[in-house]
Length: 241
Image (tube, rainbow, N blue to C red; front, top):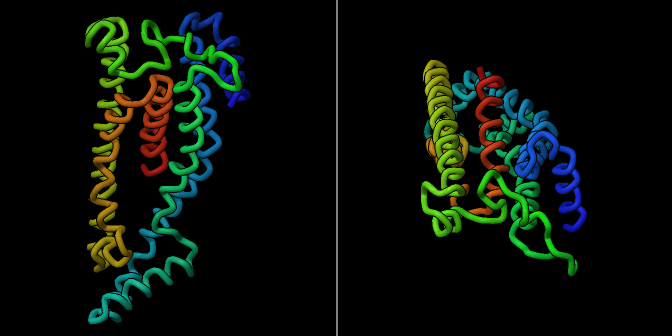
């Protein structure tokens, strides 16, 4: 962990001539962008997987006719078809799962005052008037909603809301397009894969949970979440267009 703390400090030192007191915050945004670049090939693979699943709809329609009276056999046959074509119904979750360690590193690094007996200097850094180790409750206690730190969170909440709304509309459009394609092929749009239908219905609303995350984690981790969420929205708009 000390090595990670020193890495962030090094990034902040390089960016300080441009971003001054907010250099560590800029370093976190840069770190997030690097993580997303590393994960991008998996995101592209997930997009290809979704298009491949859409191409399987005619064959799934045939399986529905064949196993119309045996739902369990239908589910098994669809899963076997996905395995045969090397298409995973949940492949889109992999990029998010692989980002978890980076988020946890930031969360841990900005939640402790010392590491290995050394003072954690990261906690001295700020984004404008908001300490990177503080949470929204600390900002409210320090100066209220419209205090210096509170306004930083107001801006973050506004950005997250805008990104979540964009992602919600994009997800609804994708869901409607998939449903129309499934209907044309004579399928029910994913009910044959256990749990996939429920996940599809919930997905458009998940972006709004970012508001809760930003409110309860240290500001440094919140910056990671906001940056990554904005990246995801743009990436999905490009890959799934």
